[in-house]
Image 1 (cartoon, one colour):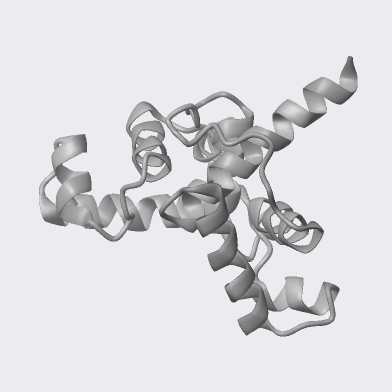
Image 2 (cartoon, rainbow, N blue to C red):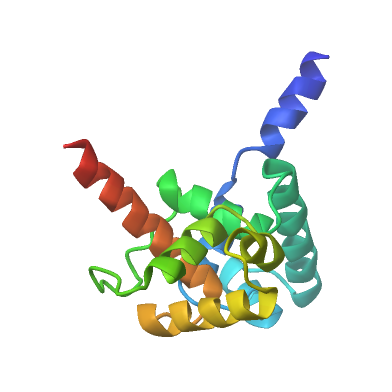
Length: 163
């Protein structure tokens, strides 16, 4: 029993290579660019592919209710200070519409386009367009970077409001 509990807890902790992988994604590397990820993490192509699959599986274990577990994982890692979002643009304040702010906030929490569309009485294609505009407006290259940036900015806002 104790061994099983230990194994479960191990699944919830990000190891150093996993943090490095998340940091690479935040820094703008496509998680599909296995060759570059492999180089940065000192993996071969096959090992990088296995590592990517392992990370997706781990994200699903850590965030079982999330529709977008990698977004949830990135948000968690930034919020907990396990990785840094400091390499992202320092545009402040983010100039997003209320709807775009809502879409970004829900995306940071791992909600998918269909779920968000149901909340705002829209369709998933419109939500995907909102996400594209969010990426453009925030000056980042990927949705994962926008998630990290949004998480960082929400944490700053919470800290300001707590004062």
